Structures are given as structure tokens and as C-alpha cells.
Length: 237
Image 1 (cartoon, rainbow, N blue to C red):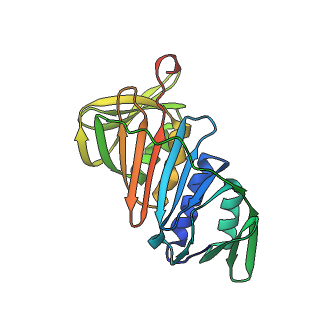
Image 2: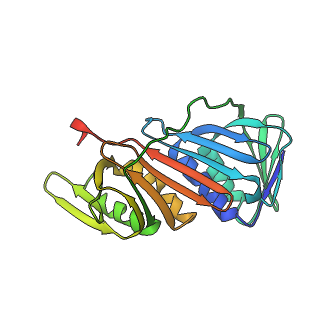
Image 3: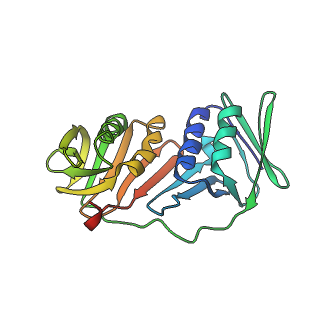
């Protein structure tokens, strides 16, 4: 197995960073025509499911499906160190080799297995296209006041902050909308895990609904991602 990435090296770094933000260890499925990554947070509150098609890479030579369990924190550090301009990944007997110029790091792996859990398909009442920077900047500012936030659509898209002595709201511009008015509370810490998506694209699809999981979707050239976060309901609010 040999993979070489140059033209999308910055995006590849961001993808690995996002995976590391979600979980410390997960399976990477190197299929003959794509890389599949499903990362689930240790709390089981949020997850990401992504596919990187072989055309994303400058060279992609995978003879047979190979599933490797990798330490994502070490992987992020290696890719950041070695993959500043380009990166070659090769499979060894018990490690993955990462090379660029005169730098080379080997990362041990375990043989992984197919993920049995599938990403739930949910019929959300609202689907919005927003600017990622606007959305995540508002979430970061809301974090100064509260641990929770309510995403609400009532003809306009609002981010509501609620603390012991404060209640506030900010508005996010919507590029496209499709659906009905609704709202739900979510953990800001977990929502902000998805902030790295800004480095991949500034256009983001988000979905939510009354007592329903938050979903974000990204579909750009040769890369697809679905992120999901459980709602905060009942006594949690």
C-alpha cells in the first residue's frame, strides 16, 4: 500500500485533526477506491463518518481492503510534523510509515475490524446552509456565557445562550433554508469539536429539530462527511 498526497495536504491535515478531536483511537479502512473513517467520541455523544475518495490523493495504490486501528493523537502529531508540503504513506509489517523529504516517522498499528454500527438516518424538520466561520464564531462566543446552547429556527436562525444569571441570543445568516420552525439544546463543547470543518470548506449544511440530534454535512471534491451530536433534553437543561 502506498499513498501520496500533495495538492490536498492542508485538507488532509485538517481531516486528521478533526478525527483526533473526536477520539483517541479508531479504525481507518483503506479500501481499493477510498479511505473510510468513522470516529465515535468516548462519551458516545458525538461521532463523525467520512469518506475520502482515491481522487483526493495524488497517488493511491491499495491492492486490497486493509483495516488499521491507529492512535489518532500520535497520527495528528506525525502528519503535522512530516506533512507540511507533501506526504507519502506506506504500509509495513506492523507500522505505517510517513515520509516527506528527509523526515520519516513510523506509527504502530493494530489490525482493525469492520464497524458494525451504522450512521442513523434521521428525518430532520429543518436543513440550513450556513457559513461555517459565522456559525462557529457565534458558538465560540456563546461558550463564554454558557455550557449549553439552543439552536433555534423561527424564520431566522438563532443561537441562544443561557446561564445562571444571563439569557442571550445571536443571529446567524442563512444561505439556504428548507424546513419548519424548531429548536433544540446541545452541548457547546461537543458542537465546537466540529469547528475544524472551517478549514475544509466555509459552506456547511446543518440539521436539527426538537429533541433530535444535531447533524452537520460536508460534501466537497472527493470528500464527504457527516457529523452527529446527541441533544440535551429534560433535566439536562
